[in-house]
Length: 122
View 1: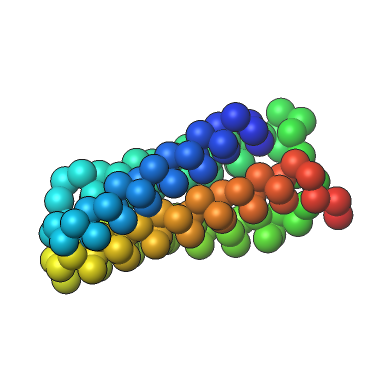
View 2: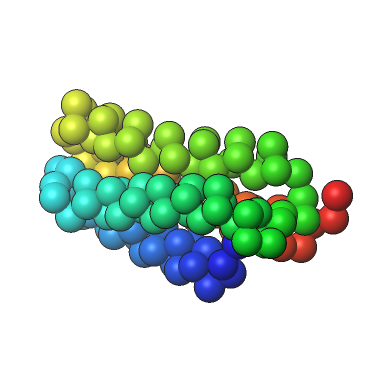
């Protein structure tokens, strides 16, 4: 796994969560910025999926459980689309808080995936 890319993901997910949180606290409805922030988080997760599939073939094996890693990855990939659907269907300021919670959860999950891939022993 590329460690710097994972840290970029953590930072982007955290910033996306902050953007959505501020929009929710400002009593704004979901808009292109908050939904776009969620889309960027999902796009980076798709890139991470590709990297995770290719990495073992080039000699970058995970040090932890690969099953646990993929469970975290699939779970993290489900959060942004589900939160976005909620935001687009509900269309209240609380929807931005749901988007923020999803982004913060993804940040934590990506950090855990980094630990599984690099520092956790089997």
